[in-house]
Length: 483
Image (cartoon, rainbow, N blue to C red; front, side, top):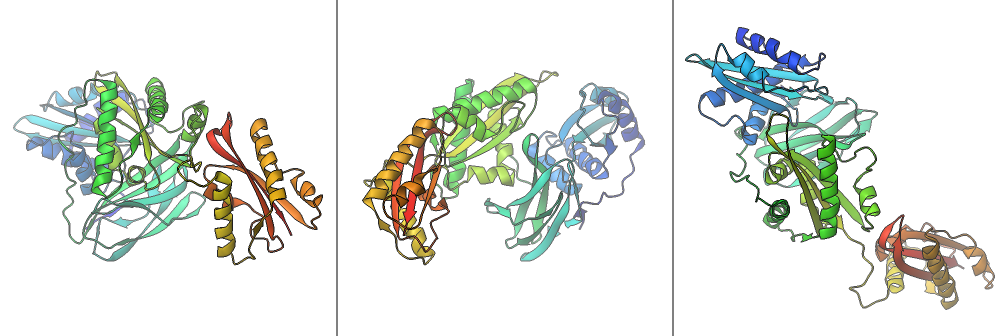
């Protein structure tokens, strides 16, 4: 049945050896190693091409990788079809230097004097222990390994129904372990993600058959041609995002011109750098870029991808469990999409795509209650949950807290210095104060003094405004507690 992780035993044919010898010098990567799993995957691509199949189909490539027990998430694929004598040179001419590559595989099928050749090139950043390619319905399997050059591993899955979610992952240094249960028949995608200097990076992607399901990944939708205008292409991607959400019973996301502008700038930067990454030199992560644009948020998620078209790049995003989790994020309500178009050195079109999903600031504007009332409601509920004595509002403490919140906003810096002493001057015996900047009245429960049973009186002050550090529309909150 086969297992991912350990490399199978494979010997190159004379034609494959000839092709490898002609191709490797073009890569500029002397340390690149032969991967038998990628060889088997490349042979499967070549075999399908020799029978009339599309060698560049993403579904076909994913199926070929599963057939070869290769867990590389996105190997680059080069293909050539020519006479047996000329195919090594034909393939070598399609290759360009790949200094980051670590592993390659070559597969060749000769038929009636014609040769079909696939060359797969990957940058491998994890070593996996043995993991089954086939599992029984209701069965479990343990996924473990070590990240190479990355850290903070996380495991994610997409089940046969298309639902994606994270799996609890144990980590020790760069090693990781997760136990997975396969409770529905069909194809599952299992993904390992690591953190590196460029942000989150997919380290491994495994296709797993549950209950005897065929290892044939469905072909991608045939229409991958973008509308001619770049903004129209971005709109088409947002429509694809919302179509996926509707299929899963989720509300569509509202397009945001502000978010799209941030996304577009990041895609332009990726194209200029020739690098697909969440973090580029000098850019910071998505949170840094949103703050520089003055966009406040409760939570934000980002997907980046590269493809021949914006729609094609988005379909690659949906094939990744961790990226699909962002598309299906239940906490998001806004989306922005930005693309950058160009051409590779060989003339092939390329699109860098950025998608940003946002849960915006909740300033209580849609509620008839005032922001300070909403903060009190959150504090009272958390106090009750903690089974601490009830709190009582104190108008004098409220006044002190309101002044403190307004002062913090003016200064652009949260701080509770001196507030507790001011409360003691009102004749109380014990006092404490908290100050913080949050995105929602409900976030006030982070107040560290809230569970303290000594406190029975509370004052709340809220100021809403913008700052260069936090962004627009945040809530600046001061809470004062006394006996």
